[in-house]
Every structure is written in structure tokens, then in C-alpha cells.
Image 1 (tube, one colour):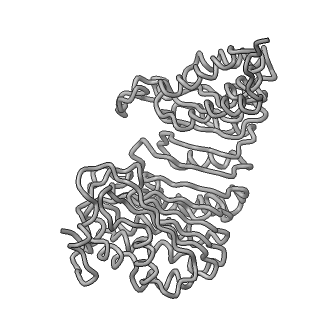
Image 2 (image 1 turned 180 degrees about the vertical axis):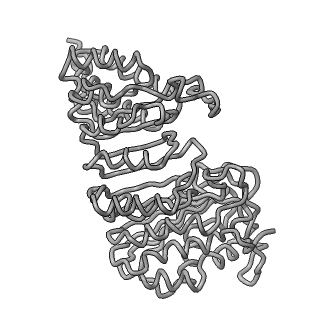
Image 3 (image 1 turned 180 degrees about the horizontal axis):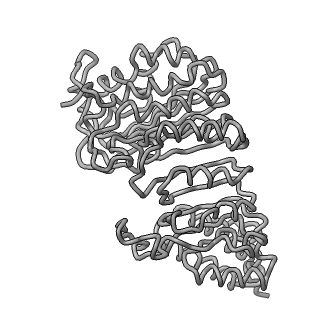
Length: 432
């Protein structure tokens, strides 16, 4: 008798789950739509696949238009059990640039209703009881939302918030974040408007209010991207609580959004608030710095920020912390193009591991791991993690922490480093 082959249910469910995981790596709308199409096909494949496929299909909901909000509300009302599957809500305004064409600020205006999706319908706030993750943006303009809109969505038990929203006033950002008392993870992706910085008076007022009301008591992980670290007086030292355990900071040499006409690199004044904030995080366990800077930034001392001195200065805010056990320095991350002049490996190490840096890491009592990510190009035999670890260990002989070096390929023309046979420990030339 012929027996039809049958896969165990666990394997089928794993396959369906993997189809769903692709949604987190998708960027453009066609890619995201393709994931939903696959899950929909899984739902219709057979009766056995339906429960798992439907669970994945409704776990992440994306709303981009008025009509989609209405249709989803009708679905939830007609089938209330489906609302319990939703754990992530992604709201982004529909625009033609979803196909990959950058949108211009002038194309989208709050007074025209652009950038507004009414996702906080009372029916959704009431029924999405298991919603934990909220993703807002891109192309959501907070000025287009009614005043006090953050109060409507505060009924959701959100623990993770990711923002890529146009704020005309940074106070609106804080009101939105503070609306979620159970917030544990916050990712501030980017500011799409040229912001005015917080004045000293606003900075003081926000700090006083945050300290008094004890906002963000459960916040444990924060990630700041470039546009935020370029703002003056940001972040206020008390705005996001003082119990953060994991802090990720993206930093580049681009000019700050507070002054679109200023094409110079950041000054130390831009970094003062960030250093003060770090100094106040007495529960910090892990600090990660993802650095992508323009060529002049690394070595010039003419009033612009020296990136290596900035790293040491920033880390110095945690000198007295007895909890920091992991430091991760990622130079020129995998998503960044290589736009530097070539430099020697020994020159790079001299610039990074200075006397101040050495004394700083020696003075961190709980430090267990120092991880450094660097670029490499194929064919350069000297790009060996073991060589880098020996070289760094030789400059930090008293460091008891583990040293890890990760090399990532840089997709760019040319080599990031001076050829090894042209580089030497005695060569003090930083670039060639």
C-alpha cells in the first residue's frame, strides 16, 4: 500500500515560523507584502497548517492607510480571538517612496493630513490586549495627530517602542515615551525634521519633571541613532530613567539636525548631555558604540571632535560604575560604506588605545569583555582576528577582561588599511 510521506508537526511549525521571521529583515513594502503573501498561502495550504500560519500572520500587523485601520477593526470585531494574536503593531504612512524613492519633506505636510494614520481607535485599544511592541514610522508626522494622542494609546501594555517619527517639538517625544509605564526597550531610529534643540530652560524643566514623576522605571534598553546624538541638550539626564542596563549609541560625523546649514562636524557641546546621561546610569551593564565618521573627524584637532578622544570621554562617565561588564566598539558598521582614507593598523591602535583609554578600562572593576569590530577586505592576510587580539592585548597588558575582535567585510572599492608590509609600529603616519 502506498503511504503519503508525512512531516512531523513540529517541523512544519518551524518552517512556518521561519517564513514569519523574514518580516523583520524586510525594508520596503513589496518585501513585507511578499512575507504576508507567503503566510497567507500557508493558511490556505491545509487544515493542519492553519492554526500556526494564522498565529504568525496576525502576530505583526502593519497599518498604512485610513481604510486599513477600518478593515482591521472590522476583522477584530467579527473575530475577537484574532486580536489576541497581535503582539506587534507597525504604523507607517503610505507614500510612493515605499518603493525605495526618498520622500521630500515638502511633499508631506500635517495640514494636508499627510503622515497621519488613526491607529488609536478605541476599538483597537480595547481589543489588542496582548500588544507589546509598537513601531511608529517612517513618515508619521506627530503634528498631524490630535493633541493628547499619546494618552489614547497609553492603554496598551507596550514594553517595546521603536520611533522614526517627525517631531516638531522634542517635548512631544518625551510625552509619547512617558505614556507607557511598562516600557522596557526603546529604539529612537531617526528624526526626519530639522529639529530645534532643547533650550537650557526646557532641558532643566524636563529633568525636573522626569525626576519628580519617576518615568521609565522599567526601561532597561535604549538605542540612540545618529540624529538624536547630534542634538544639543539631548538626552536630558533624567528623561529616560536611571535603570538602563544596555545602551547602544550610533554616532557619525554628520552635522546635527538642529542646524541644517551647519556643515561642520559635531562639537563637544553636542555630546555634553549624552555624557551626563551616561554618568547617571548606575545600573549600566553593556555599552555599545557604533561609529561611522567622516575622514577628517578621526584625527583633526582644530576644534572638531576627535572621535577617539570622544570615545574615551564618553566612557569616562561610567568610570565609577561597578556594574559595567561589557564594552563593544564597532568602527564603521556593516551597513556603512567605507569613505575613509586608508590608514595603518598600528596608527589606528595608537589613536584608540591612548594612556587615558588604558587607565579608563583598567579602572572599570566589573569589566569582563571588550569587543572591537573592524573592517577588512579579502586577500589581506594580515586581517586576522588573532593578530588584532595580540596587538590590542599588548597595549592593554593589565586588562583582565576578555578581548574579542570581529572583522567584517566592507563593500567598497580599495582596501581600508595600508598594506601590512608598508605599515610598522614605528610609523607615526595615520593615513597614506
